[in-house]
Length: 169
Image 1 (cartoon, rainbow, N blue to C red):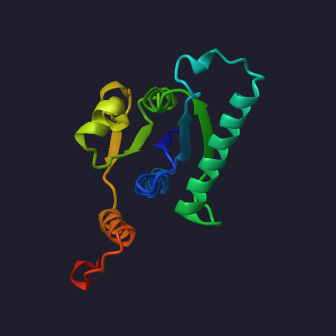
Image 2: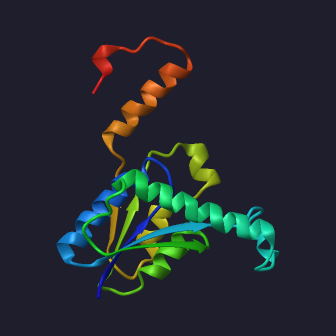
C-alpha cells in the first residue's frame, strides 16, 4: 500500500504540510505517516550515548511528546479520516524522511518556510535535501499566509506597539 510521509517539526509551519498530507492520503487512499526526526544533544558527539542512557531516554520521550502535540494542534482530538501512523526517528530530518518514503509509489510531503541567510548557514533546508535525494515524488508545501500575519502581530505585541487595523487579515 502506498504511503504519504510528512515531516513534522512541531513548528507552526508544519501544520500546513500536515493538512495537505492528510488531504493527499484521503485522495489516494493511502496511509499517512507523520515522522518527527530528532537528534541527540551534541550532534555526533552526543551519539556516543548508550541506549539506556537517561538523557537519551528523555530526548526520545520529548520527541514523542512533540509529535503528539503537533498532531493535536493540526487535527485536534479527531484524527484525519485516514490511517495515521506517528513515528519518531533518531536521525537527521532529511535522511529520515527520504528513508521512510523509499518506494516510488510513496509521496513525501515537506513544509517550506521563509529562511534568512543566517538560518540557511546554520541549518540546511530539509525540503531541498528531500527534493534532491528522494526516490518518490516530493510535495513542498509553503507556509500559510496567516503565519506571516501572526509573526507581525506577535512582534508588535512584544514591542508594545499598537496594532494597525489595516494590516489585519
